[in-house]
Image 1 (cartoon, rainbow, N blue to C red):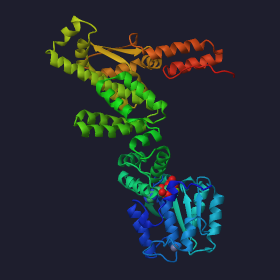
Image 2: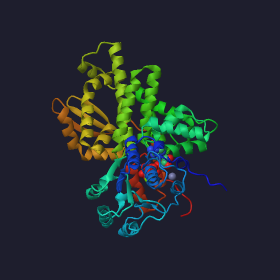
Image 3: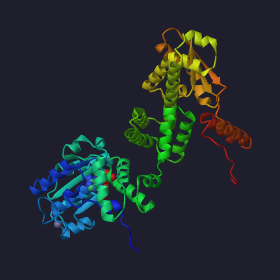
Image 4: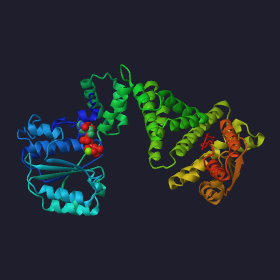
Length: 501
Ligand SMILES: Nc1ncnc2c1ncn2[C@@H]1O[C@H](COP(=O)(O)OP(=O)(O)OP(=O)(O)O)[C@@H](O)[C@H]1O
Ligand SMILES: [Mg+2]
Ligand SMILES: [Zn+2]
C-alpha cells in the first residue's frame, strides 16, 4: 500500500527562497550563512504553522551542506537529503512539550560536547521550549552561556512570554508572523497546480481566510476540502466540507437583522450551535458576505450590518457565554431595526402627535407604543451600554432579553415566563438595576420586574411540557438535578428516556 503523504509535509519549503513571507527572518539567516556569521543560539517565536520548524531545518541543512550557494543549501548532496528525510544524526529535534524535564536537557548537554558525527555542526531544534521546567531552563542557560563549539540551538516557541529573559538575552530572536491571506492563497494556488486540483478563486480566498494566518492550517483545510469535493472545488463545497454554515443561512441572518425578525435570529443561533460551528467564525463570514452584498447593491445598510457583525465577533472573543451574547446582541439589533422602521412609518404617515396625548388615547397599539418608545428607548439603550461597558454580562444579558416599558418615571421590566433564570437575576439585583436607570434618567425613576405573560414561544412551551411529563418518571435524585438544569437553561434542556440503565 502506498502511504499518502500529508499535504503540508509534502510542501514543506526546502530552501530559504521557498519560504512564504517572513522575508526579514529568512534574508538575515541566509546572509548569516553566506558570510559565516551564524551564531550559536536562535529563538524562533511566532504563531503555529508559520514556518518556524521549516526554517530551522533549512538552516540546519545550510550550516552542514558542503555545497551551499549564496547561503542556500544545495538540496542535492548526502547531507541535504538526509536532513530532509530526518535521518541525519547531527540534527536533533526535541519536543519540549513532551520532554520538559532536566534529564532531557542534561542529555542534550552531554551529547552536545561530542563533535558532530556526520556533518560540520550539531543542530538542536527544540520545539515549544517555553514548556521546559525551571530546572531545565537553568540547565539550558548554562549550556547557552558556555556553548560547546560547533553546536547550534534553534529554540522555537509559540509563547515567548513564558520564556525567562535570562534565556532570551543569550539568543538572537526572530519573530515569525501570521501570513497575509494573499500570500496564503497564492501558495495554495501553486500547490493546487502541482497536484492538479481544480479550484476556484473564491474557494482559495475562503480557505486563506479560514486559516487565520497559518499556512499549515490552510493546506490542511485544502486537503480536507479536496477529499470531500467533486470535479471542481468551489467556495460552496469548501463550506460543506468543513461544516460551515451555508450562504442561505448567512443571508437569512443579515435579512433578519435588517427586518427585525427575532424568531429567525434565535433559529439561526440554534442552527449554528448544533452544526458545531463557532459564532466568531460565523460573524466574520457575515462581514465578508455583507461586503459582497454591498458591492452588488450599493445599499449602505449592508455595511452597517457588516460592522455590527465584526464588532460582535470581537466581543465574543472574550465572552464565556458566547451563544447568549450572540443572541442578546442580535435580538437588540433586531429591536432597533423594528423601532426605526416603525418610527419612520409614523413620521411618514402623520405628523407626530404630542407624546402625552398619544399615550393616553389608546393602549397597546403599535403606533402609540412606537411613539412612546422613540422617546424613552434611549434610556434603555444607555443602561444596556453602561452594563456592557461595566462588564456586567449577566445583568446585561438578562435585561437585553427582557421587554422594558418606560413611562412617567417608571420602568417596567417584563421577563418572559420561560426565562426564569433572567427573572431571578433581575429580581435579586433590582437595586442595582434601579441605580443604573437612575444614572441616565432625567427625573427620579422606579423600577419593577414582572413576568411577561404575553410572550412565550410555542415551541419552547411544547418542549417544557414534554419535560414536565418526563420529570415525573425520574428518580428523586435525578429529578432534582433535572429541575435545576431546566431552571438554568430553560430552552436548552430536553429530558429523554433511554432504555436500559
Ligand atoms: N512560511 C511558510 N512558507 C512555506 N510553507 C509554510 C510556511 N509556514 C508553514 N508552511 C507550511 O506549513 C507546514 C508546517 O510549517 P512549520 O512546521 O514550519 O510551522 P511551525 O511554525 O513550526 O508550526 P508549529 O508552531 O505548530 O510547530 C510546512 O510543512 C509548510 O507546508
Ligand atoms: Mg514547528
Ligand atoms: Zn547540500
